[in-house]
Length: 110
Image 1 (spheres, helix red, strand yellow):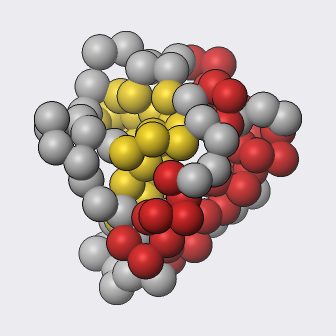
Image 2: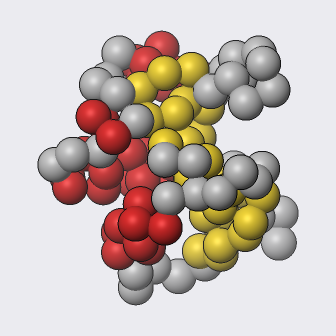
């Protein structure tokens, strides 16, 4: 599965000048990792965000968000965000920041 290069460039723009961020192709898409943990990524034309289990229900209430069901089952703590939830640009930034915040709260894998 290919991923949306335009969305990837937008996410890179949010992440520029950040230290400790690594890109990795995974799940047939692109993931952005912090300290070895996925913070967010792109599958097809959707942003996936690791929000954590405590913020999961609130995240699903936001525009464009839906449960991440990559494996056919909902992955609690992960959401997909479609185009409607990524415009205007501050919405994209807020999602990416939320993913970064959660990933940074986890013990480092590196």
